[in-house]
Image 1 (spheres, rainbow, N blue to C red):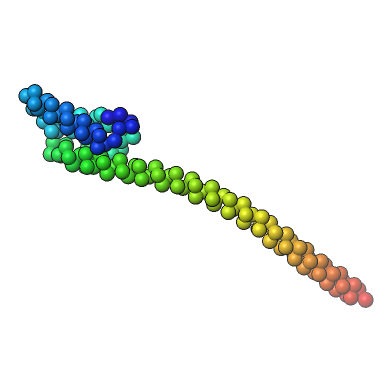
Image 2: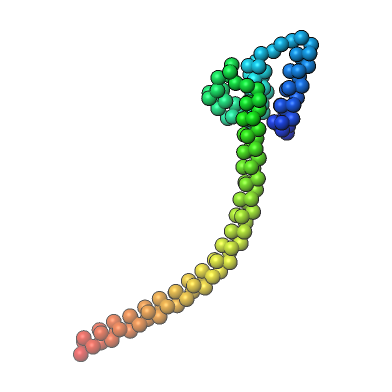
Length: 136
């Protein structure tokens, strides 16, 4: 199977080869075809191959069950890739919103600093008046 080939196209190709061999009088066990299919899958499918080998008895696994499982895996991978692209677009919109919020936060910070300075000035005046009142 090539990297850009879909599971359904690969399924058609494998079945065509198996049928051609059957027509030529060569009977191949389904478990042998399954092992060859699993071996021929691209690297991106290594996790699925390992899961199938560990969870299923390859001698009793049917070829159509294998391809159904691979098709489900392919659809999940494509869905994950499409969501990954959406996340990037969402992130950039979020960055723009954050920039707008930052300017609003800076204005709030300026107001807070002005209020704090005003309160600090009042406190220092009170302490000065207490100190001068205590001396007399």
